[in-house]
Structure formats: structure tokens, C-alpha cells
Length: 158
Image 1 (cartoon, helix red, strand yellow):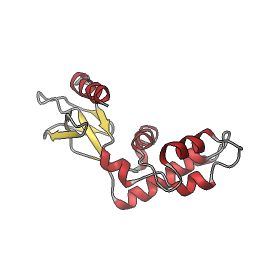
Image 2 (image 1 turned 180 degrees about the vertical axis):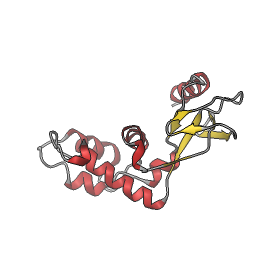
Image 3 (image 1 turned 90 degrees about the vertical axis):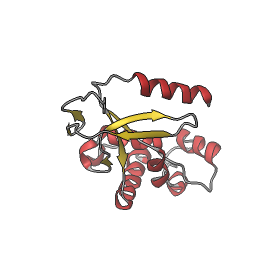
């Protein structure tokens, strides 16, 4: 775990100031867990689905699983769908316990996902924010994206 934290600290410290970074924090993954009901019901289109088996081995039958990685992917693929709001720009640091802290910086202009100006305060970072309504939408989108059988070309997957 210590190596993981050190890697994240290095990433945060050395990330280029000219490249905006969007962080999906602890509270996002906790607020939109992947539902165990989907694992139990949505992956039976093959006898031994690797996602279902890995989930059950890791998390068991009775727990929903936080979705930090999935929420990051969802924002990256669909930033315009308003699943999330964004914080004010700032600078992220990774603490010794692995938690992230954002020091807000005022005066930086953002247009969508890109920074219009970079100030001397190096306010390149933002983090995802999510309301309870957005959390429900995120869970639904994640289940739809993760549980769909391969080859499903429905409009929501394009």
C-alpha cells in the first residue's frame, strides 16, 4: 500500500501544469457503489463470467463495491452528460494516508475539460462532485455499461 501512495504522491507532484487533471475522490466511489444485485443477475449470459467471479471472490455476495475506477472511466468517456459536477480549480496533494486534498485556487478559467489559462498558483486540478440524483444516474449508467453483453450496439453504448 505504501508504494501505491508514494506513486500517487509522485504523480500529483510531477503532473505537468499545462495538462488539466480531473480526480475522482473517495466520496464519489462510496456514493455510487456497483450494486451486488447486478452481479447476481446480469452476468449469467455465460456460465463463468470473469467479472462476476472476480467480484464474488473479492467482495462477497452481500456487499456493493465502491466504484472509483468506474466513475473515472465514466467521466472520461462521457464528460458532457452531466453525471458529475466539477470543483473549482486547485492543486491536489496526496497525503501520507493516501487521501487527497485539494487546495482551491481562484482566477483560473476553465472551458469544459481544458484550462484556458494557467496561473502561477498552478491550479491545474479539479475533482468530481456528485449530487444524490447524479449518484443514482451514475449507478444506472455503470450497470448498463458494465453488464451489457459483448456486441451490444444499443445507442447508450455508442
